[in-house]
Length: 127
Image (cartoon, one colour):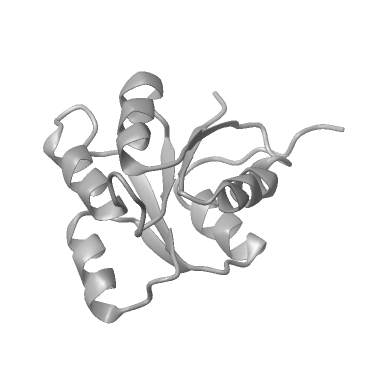
């Protein structure tokens, strides 16, 4: 089955860039503009992987992570943090919350793909 990947970022440009990176693969892309909508999408669609921004209005990435980890049915959801914040304390905080990997913005497409491919199976689309 093709993986579902949820991109949670307050920047529409970043969400579009993430979707473009995965467009070459058989996967379903979902988007959310903040952690609150991201949590709703997670409950509704059960993504296999979440690409999560750290700083967002309404609900930031750390709060969304805390809520994911507090929910028994969602706590094992795989998350890659994608953010401009590379502060070691930030990295330690999200690592304690079970983030599988961390990428700083601006990101390199191949780096995001490599990290995602360690967590979900990415099958190229046939042309």
